[in-house]
Image (cartoon, rainbow, N blue to C red; front, side, top):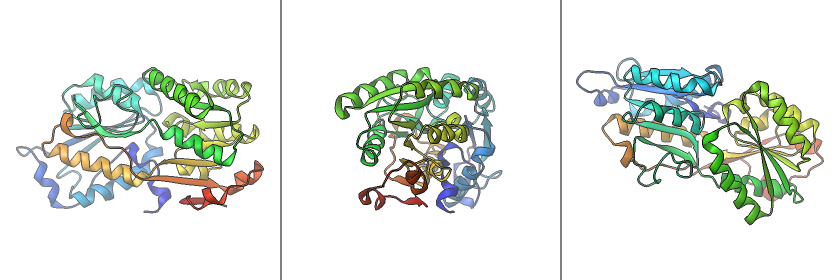
Length: 328
């Protein structure tokens, strides 16, 4: 699998392979893993392929030693609570959530007993999803992206454009993230002397309004938050940033392949391998409350030189040598 095929692999999973998976069967019942996805199913097709190879290494045979139940909100967060309840009704043994904190919150509201594995949550402790990384408590564990990812993204933007002082951050409307975003905004302004302004979109139809509101503040750069809704509307967002001639920062490298300037975020392969380890351990009897939450240890940097040239930017050699992917 090449790097492109593994991008965003933490949004979903499926499984196949060898007889070792039979060890987790309980009383002849085949374990069921529920996958709760915010994004549309077509957008995670490559993801499922990536997760298959990881679970194959752990020895699972789909339909024989494991059953995968995937439900998708097709980008509509309001559908998540009902879908989470569906998975509970199907008596799944584990729920994997993809699509940020909102998916994990929907799963938590649906069950306090079935283990939940978060795959793309941000600031899990600050967002109140777990008590601590070492001892999460409750029924949620998995992987979380640290809130200081935003600091590193801003540092990289300022390496490219030292004059950046005001940044517009495009996010999906999410009440659960309000406090975390406030904390990040205050810390960035105190420590980095950069002003952040959040612009929320409630739906694809609402995105043009958010973009126009961002444009009106005359920002020096744009950060696009990692979110399925924004990812699915990437063409519209990239048209906006190019028309406004704004440097843009993303999390997924394929946003750079599509025309974005720069991306910095967790290595997708590192994430989905972590997810399958959690699935395996929970199915074998581990308790979610006692499994430490993990944070990504590998991050990928991608840069689009064509976009940089269009913006009149020269990428410093010190940044280029750190990039895993350079689009020319």
